[in-house]
Length: 526
Image (cartoon, rainbow, N blue to C red; front, side):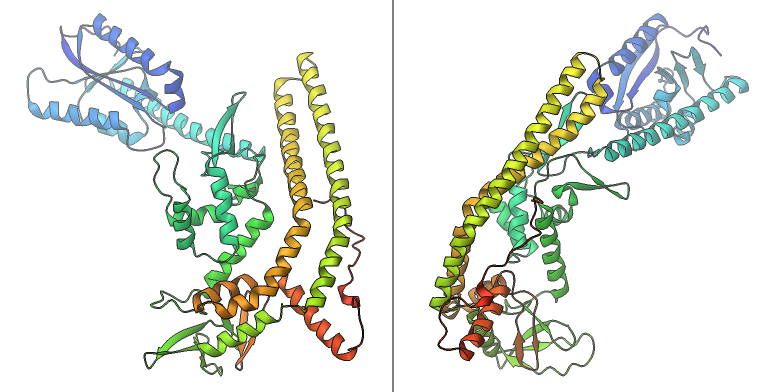
């Protein structure tokens, strides 16, 4: 049936318009054009428009508000039994009305006259079977178009991912930007540094996820849109997301991004190690805040050592025995504290040794400065080489020797490489300045760690131990400390010095094991 059918004067009708994405709505051509067309059609054919319904949503997602409200209204009209109830729907064309076959069935049950204005078709219960059949074909074609659109969208996102472009909304710490019609992510100048701090804090091993979340709240870490505090679950996702060091997951694969990373791969890996370590040591909700729980595992079976209080005053530690009966005996907390104190004292050096090491640091600092200077000169030369390439390629684009797509692709890669070089130069400048200072501070910390440990409460002792040691074990009543770097080196060389001194008490000067070694393989690897 075509639109030459005579319609009664002032027949009531509703209009429905839809676009398939918010981008179309922003461009401002689809919804206004549809409504203009439909209102003109209503005026020309003597329809009284009583409602207009609009949807701006993706084709596959459920919950079209305008469509749902229109169905409610039309059902209410049908139940009213009024002689002039609305039973006419005006829409631009088939694929504007239906998302799927269910929508077709829903509207068919309402006994409506549906005018597809651009297709010059009016469909109703009185329509011929051939017209209904053709309409059904159009519905299937519309659904196929929607499915195909979804597939093409997925393909486009995968293609962007293969180019190193993160194809979705920027996660916390980044923002979406647009350049030459393409969307990219770049670090958020406000939130980005806060995210970097969270990685650095957690990498120390001194914070649980809850403590880290609370600390980040005190530092003002919040969602930028609504100002709400970022929950612990989101903090956990951030710490697990490789996007922050330069890679991202998409459709089950890992891609190397062209965006600027917020953290280094080394820092990210350290955070994963801390997280795994805390996961292995997790022993359930603690009623008491025990000083050394979570710092020790059983040397016999690998299970955690947990604390219990006896006679309401004595704290004992024992193996959980989760892997079966364990021969390790219970031990008083005071004994663990004493042996940890001995482990801390093992990194303290004699005054003469400290003097030797500081002198060696000063000597090696001259070599380190030369190394950093040479490396930064090479980086700067490479940076300038890339800039020459960019300038020459820009002239080629202006002269028409290369097209815009080629220019965009190559320039993005080279600019990213320049950014990487810039960060490497910055790191080497910082390392050059702080090499000697940090080395001396570290030695001073090792010297005072014993005194600090002895004077602190048990909880503060825990912080010092956690800073110096990691993954320590307890076996047959003896602590086996596992020092973090560089305290492991201090402990080993200090033990070697004491042995050497015992063998040769009259020897003066620097022993062989303190002499700096030459790394013949050190290159410009950054």
